[in-house]
Structures are given as structure tokens and as C-alpha cells.
Image (cartoon, rainbow, N blue to C red; front, top):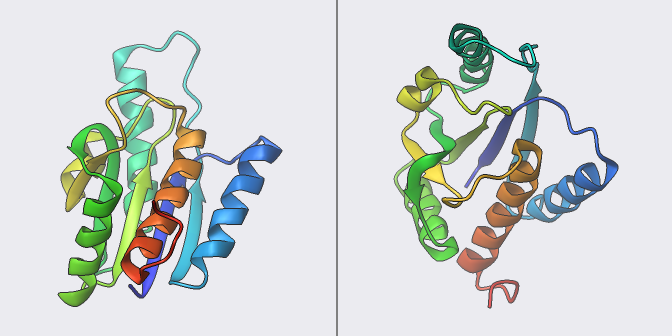
Length: 160
């Protein structure tokens, strides 16, 4: 694995979330080059129409997709995506690297999710759970899982 990028909608406002992300980013540094990119979150009214939500998602989606390098393997995190265990995700990432796709980008949407365009542009739609989580917490959870996958692949003791 050469590099992993996490492209997210919005900034982390809570210190505890920033601290958790920083900790996992530090841990991942021993395994890969990690980049976390935050794109601007669209302002959507409190009681939006379907058209306002769609327009907001589309604008965020354009910003997210623009962060993917050519040849990057694109993974969209969405509830309807494929579920994988930590070991299955580790194997999947290892297989990508073996097959020459060492650069992976993960897309995390905002509070309204990801646009259909981002999901369609993804090589994999991945679900963390059938439960719904706040998008800011999903960033911490993803970074933890990426660290866990690297520990699994290297035979580390983190994953029991």
C-alpha cells in the first residue's frame, strides 16, 4: 500500500474527534502515506426540499471526486455498500496492492450522505454497518479500521 487518502465532507469541530483522528493517522504513518482531505460542506436549509438536498450532494460530490488521483482505487462509504469484516478489508487492500493499485481513496459524505455520482464513480461501495453513524465519527472509525487492516496484514497484535 503506497498511499491512502480519506476525502471527507466538512471539518472536525470537536477536539476529541480531531485527537482520535490524529492518533490513528500517526499510527498509520508506519504503514503508508496517509492524507486526509476536507472539502467544504454545502449549506443546506434546516427544512430542505429534495431538490436542495440533491443540489448540495451533487456539489459536495464534485469536490470529493476531484480529489481522486488518476488510477486511484475509489471506495465510497455508504450504508447500502458491501459489508466486510476487518480481515476481509485487509485482504482486499492487500490484493489491490499486489495488483498494482496501491493508491486508495475513501469518500465520506456529509450529514446527507454521498451523491449518486460519487457512488457510481466508486470501485467499491463499502458499508461500515447497517446502523447510521454521524459522518464525523465515521472518519475516526474508518481510520481505526485502516490501522487495524495494516496490523492484520503485518501480523501485528492489535487485532485479536
